[in-house]
Image (tube, rainbow, N blue to C red; front, top):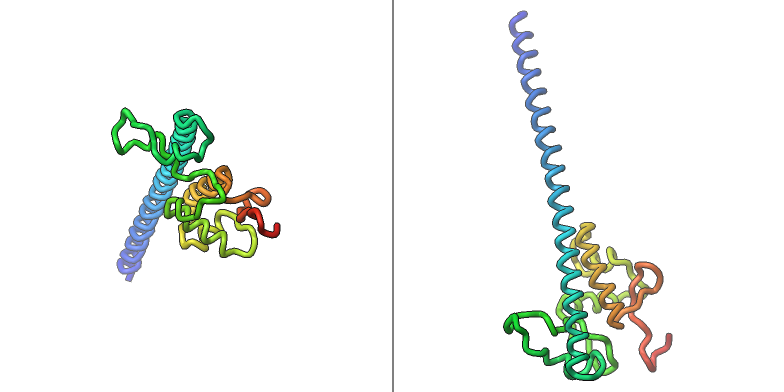
Length: 176
């Protein structure tokens, strides 16, 4: 009988060793995932910052070319770009709000955010906007969404009613 007990101990030790090896593999994968998610977050933020800079450059360029204010007709027709037709320079994807503009002038993703905020009966935080829009509530995704909401605030489409709480502004002729 001693050999059967010894065999069971040997198998138990082998199973423990295999379980520990799998745990180490899981820990390595978690660390790898954390590094990749951090890199992804930085890249998303960098892309959004570059897009914002290009938006601002385009607005400044349009104002200088048109000799008028940002949001004029000159903004709708970007100046020829040395980078070709596809260059975003000179194009303002989120225009400054004006009374004659409809939400339909915004890119689709921004239209969806505006719809979620308009449907809410109170100011929303970015994570709640993400949930309501059916978007990921992963931290890096919410940060990207917050950047979009802040851009809408900067352009006059939304207001920040307290830190991180976004809502529609009262428009002229509406009750506050």
